[in-house]
Structure formats: structure tokens, C-alpha cells
Amino acid sequence: MADSKIEQLLKKREHLLKGGGDKAIEKQHQLGKLTARERLDLLFEENTFRETHLFIKHHCTHFGIKDREFPGEGVVTGHGVIDGRPVYAASQDFTVAGGSVGEATARKIAELMDAALKTGDPFVMINDSGGARIQEGVDSLSGYGRIFYRHVLLSGVVPQISIIAGPCAGGAAYSPALTDFIIQVRHKGQLYITGPLVIKQVTGEDITAEQLGGVESHAYYSGVVHFIAENDEDAINITKRLLSFLPSNNTEDPPFLPELYDEEILPDESLNDIVPQDSSEPYDMREIVVRVVDRGDFMEIQEHYAPNIVIGFGRLTGRTIGIIANQPKHKAGVLDIDSSDKASRFIRFCNAFNIPVVTFVDVPGFMPGVQQEYGGIIRHGAKMLFAYASATVPKLTVVVRKAYGGAFLAMCAKSMGADTLCAWPSAEIAVMGAEGAVNVLYRKEISEAPDPKVERNRRLEEYKDTFANPYFAASHGMVDDILEPAETRAYLAAALEVLKAKRELRPQKKHGLIPM
Ligand code: HXC
Image (cartoon, rainbow, N blue to C red; front, side, top):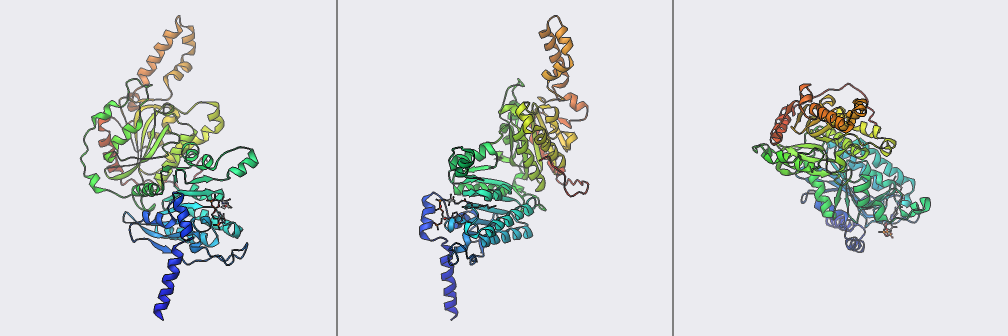
């Protein structure tokens, strides 16, 4: 008797674990995609995944699905172990009714998110779905509402990562949008609010689904996607690497790697040769970043979006740091709307998860222009000020070269709360650039001079001699030290060590009002 019950269980389980069945699995493979379960197998350490609610069923009686079975309700949910730490994951099963989300599907996912919140473990969502299950009407819609609501509850408490491994259309795209990081699989993942057909109807524009919601669209133009993956395996590897930098929740510090802490820090003379003599010449800021982080291991985020600012994770003496750096190679490293959005969101992520921020400054200013002003550079640039000033994690700033005006403040000057700020001898720290300043201060003198060009150059040199160096700012207490670049890693490591116990209290409030 007992044996037949066990047999029944094993049979039922075997059937359900097949999801949409062999044919649908074969189709998924033919499309170059892994199944929901294969993705989870890659994500978790062997034999650590524990599935929840495999046996759940929908109770919908509409549109002929009353007696239709959707194994697992189109999503595989559960928890497992990654790098020795528990992680929760939901993986949509496209082989079951296109991974569509019914009321029971949403209940599974929401319950998992509640558990992640209670135990303080990261949540990973693998998206591959046609969206809300149309037959279930508003029940599936409100199911999505339940998921969105929980993304917000989890935000800032546990890291949330989304993989876009297939379609992710309509309102469903807001699930990943509410998470911290989005990884999209090239040619497989598509993310959009309204598809090509609706767009054609409403605006008359012709566009393919890939052009609209593929990686080109989101990793380069919209900034919605943080990482491009070449395939499912790559997406999983990116997820694991990302998690390796992060704490499990906001009450913990990120993982500490003692073997890196013990490595001796020697001066790196190659840092002395990166910044060109001519201060208008570009260089690649990443050359500096990779020399400062442990073993050159830098995980860049949103590499292709707003490349005039570089953001990402690295480690310093075994501790995770978040790096924000102007990139003189693109638009001279200027701060504009997109780069301000990109950096300020990242600063807030670091602050929420106890990750010190290290800022490398080479910024000529905010981007001038009618489009920037009409687009709200004031509001977007203010996000940088808000994000840095409200961050209470250790804040370390290195002025590499240009640090002009409000853009310098927006890159975490001392007055904006930097705990330590060092400058390289190539630093130029001033209220505004020489060209603009001379035009304002000496317009009359220049126009009335016997040779206006000579007079202008003389005034320019005078201004640069006074301000285009780190010494004036240092003499006014705005720079803690002026360093030989080769010493930067040692300087930052010592600063991080002393700041690791930093605690900063702020006035009680419900929340501030970041200029959104
Ligand atoms: C129910 C769905 C479904 C859905 C797909 N299916 N999407 N069932 N509800 N939303 C089913 C199909 O009927 C089919 O079932 C199976 O999944 C596979 O779908 P195909 O169309 O055969 O696959 P493919 O050609 O690869 O196309 C995939 C797709 C397409 C691009 C995702 O299915 C599609 O456009 N689906 C609808 C997308 C959409 O409009 N979603 C919005 C829903 S409303 P069978 O039985 O034939 O295998 C919404 C509101 C917002 O999301 C909710 C959040 C706020």
C-alpha cells in the first residue's frame, strides 16, 4: 500500500518535472534556449536546489482552461546555494503555456519573495514568458501586482537580479525594471512595454521585436539593461559573479576575501604615466581603475550606456567597493542626463548594501546645451548630489585631473561628504574652467587690449597657474593629500581600513525626496 503511494508520488513528480513535455522542451532547445530547470541547475551548486509548490494548480474556469493542466503553473520556484550562500530563484517555464503568469503562478513567486525577505537572501528571477495568462484575466493581472509590490518591499533589503532569457513583454517588463540588475541574453531576450504591432497601430512606426526590445535597444540606448549575456550559461555566470560582490542583505557586509587582504601593496609606477601631459587629451579611465582594484578584477556595469561615466564593482584588500569614474574617452567625461542617472542609481545601490564608494574624478563640467536643459539636466544632475550626500557608506574620492564647478561637487567633493579626498599632481580643481572664467572676468580688459588675443592668453595662463592645479584647493582644506599616482592603491587601502567601522547617523525621516 505504502509502496503504491510512493510510486504514485514519484510518477506525478516525474510528469510535472517535464513541464510542457518532451516536444515543448525540444522546441525550447531548438530555439537555442535552456529550459527553466536547466537554468536553475546551472545557477545552483549541485543538489542544493529545493523546489517549492511543484504540485500547485490553477482554479480558473474560463476560456477552456478549466481542465487544462499547466505543470508547476509555468514557473519553477525554490532556493539553493551559490558560493556557499542561500539564494532564492524563480525561473519561468516557457514550455508551459509560454511561461504565462496565472494567479497561482504569481502566488508561488510572491511567496518565494516573502521568504527571501524573511531570511535575508538574494532573489533571482529568470524571465521567459508571454506575460499575464490571458485566460485568467484580472486574476493574473493582480498576480503581477503582487509580484511588483514585493519587488518594492525587497528593494534595498536583499539584492534582486533579473535575467531576460526570452520574451518579457507588456506590463511584465516592470518586474525586472523594479529589480537591481538586469542581464539580457542576446537574440533571445526581448523586453518591451508595447510590441511592434501595437506600435504600428498607434504611431505608425515599423520596427521588429528584436530592434525594439533586444540588447542593442536596452544596453546601449535605454539603459534598462545592465549586462549583455551571449547565452543562458553566460547569463548565469554573470549572475554568480555579480552575487560574489554583494552581501546577502542590507544588514550584512559584502563577502570579505582574506587572501586578498594579505597581499602586499607595492607602488604601481605605471599609474604615473596614464594621464597625458596635455590636459585636453583623452585617456581610458579604466586603465586607472583596473590598476587600483585587487588583481585587476573589475566588473563593469552598463558598459555601453552613457559611457562617459564608468561604474562597477571591484575589491580593495578583499573588500567590495563600488567605483564611479568619469571617462575622458567619451564626451570628455562630462556629466549629462544619462550619466547622472546611471551613476546616482549605482551610488544608492552601494549605500543600501554597505558597499564603500570610490570615485575617480576627471570632469570638465555638466553638459551644456538646449537639449540637456530641456531634458532636465538640473533635475538629473541633482540626483548625483542627492545620492552622494545621502550615502553614509565610506566615500573615497580621487581627483585625477579636471574637477570643475558643480560637476566636481556632484562627483563627491569633501563638502558633499567625501570621507577622504586625494588629488594627483595633474588635478585641476576650480569653480569653473579657464576659458569660461576669463570670458566672464576680463571681457572688458580683453576687448580693450591692443592685442585682444595676447591679452586673453595672458589671462588664461594667469588663471590656470592659480587654479588649474591641486595646491590652491589643498591650501583651502578641500584636499586631504596630494599623491604620486603610484601610491593610490596603498592610500585608498589605508583609508578603507580606517573607514570600515564608519557609522554616520542622519535625522529621522520617512524618506527624502530624490529629484526623480
Ligand atoms: C496565455 C500564452 C500567453 C499568454 C503565450 N501563450 N503567451 N497563453 N497567456 N500571455 C501560450 C500560447 O498560446 C502558446 O500556447 C504557448 O504559450 C507558446 O506561445 P507561442 O505564441 O506559440 O510562442 P512564440 O511563437 O514563441 O511566441 C511567444 C510570444 C507570443 C511572443 C510570447 O506567445 C505572444 O506574443 N504572447 C502574448 C504576449 C502578450 O501580449 N502578453 C501580454 C499579456 S497581458 P500553446 O497552447 O499553443 O502551446 C499582460 C498585462 C500586463 O501581460 C501584466 C503585468 C502588469
